[in-house]
Length: 285
Ligand SMILES: [Zn+2]
Ligand SMILES: [Zn+2]
Image 1 (cartoon, rainbow, N blue to C red):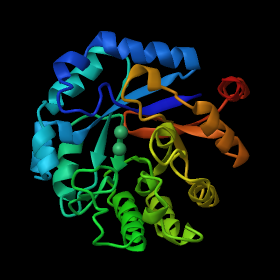
Image 2 (image 1 turned 60 degrees about the vertical axis):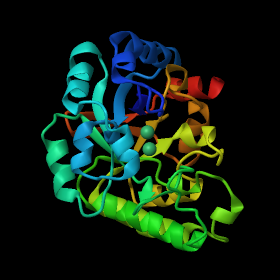
Image 3 (image 1 turned 90 degrees about the horizontal axis):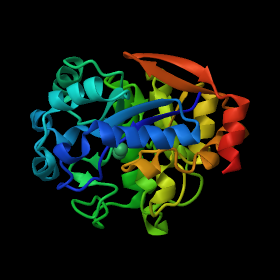
Image 4 (image 1 turned 120 degrees about the vertical axis):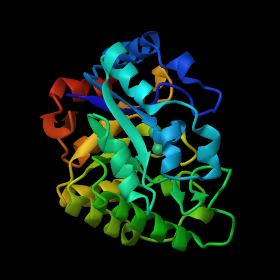
């Protein structure tokens, strides 16, 4: 069974309002593209920072700018007006664990996608508030990034670790340490394995300056050795991105001997095999 669990129903710009995009018609557009790609399981995971309740977790200026919608209205919309699984993409904010737990546990998410976009106040994947201001070496940023991924996993707040090597976003050699990168990956993989989370394989990296799947093959190889299950996603922000480049992802999964994907239902996880036909269909495109 193919899945796409990391979907956003709107672009990331602040003007993209809930009123305009959280509609059954828009959700049906995502479903139609998924059907065309043979993707049976679809879930939406809107960014937590677009909801006013997120300001109880963090008061970063970017969050203050974006926090406009009501989280409970989003949950009700997904449950009542769509046939999508209900998820959320929640940032791990060190020190806010109890407040994150309260926010998440008060709602009946099918799954929670945990992500790291910021190291303290600095973003790894944005021009604004960037961590890449020259004050830290790439080695330092990468080490802290993957240590934070481990901390995210161990927090027990999440089901899936999103885009696990987002730190490579810019694809800029000056923002990437030299040599074998496994020394950075290892603590993250250890944390994910110990905490029993799923790791996301995301095609979004192919649409970003890095031009690679998240995570890198070397990272995923360590996940396979540690028997970490995989959740497959596109991180689409528009219908035409649903299942984008799944041929590339399915090819990598096949090469590494990954034959099953995580399926989530009401907070429980099971594994479903990737059928031969699904694999072939992905590779035809
Ligand atoms: Zn993200
Ligand atoms: Zn996302």
